[in-house]
Length: 125
Ligand code: HEM
Image (cartoon, rainbow, N blue to C red):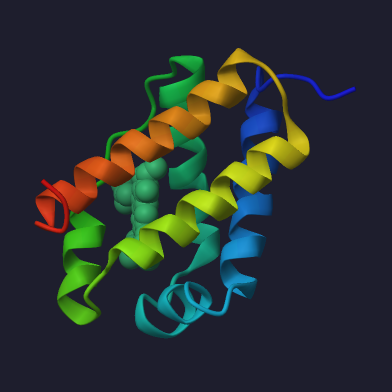
């Protein structure tokens, strides 16, 4: 029986598992590893805070979620296929591990943030 996302440990497990999928992915893996050259030790705690804010109402996240994507987009144009893949890996991660209203909210929020990014990039209107 799966539980819902209710604790920091759940968020950390979700984010770690998601990034394992992202790094192993043929389309997104090279963007994170070779283009962004992401330092996971530095990045994962940012993502824990981001999802902790969205799903558990915590107040530790202080960043600007769009900015790194604007920078990335100037190195490799991000497109709809990449966002679809990101969302599909994220939904798979959540569905494999959790079940409940907060798990559903996580997927809905990811979709609406992705739409916001796509609009700001002028890919959708
Ligand atoms: C094609 C889709 C995406 C790609 C390739 C991508 C890639 C990246 C990369 C490489 C970074 C780290 C940049 C750095 O620190 O140097 C990053 C940061 C981040 N991404 Fe994404 N991302 C995508 C979609 C999304 C979506 C849909 C969300 C929201 C749910 C999201 C949320 C974030 C957040 C919160 C950060 C950290 C921002 C900060 O530093 O405060 N990303 N992304």
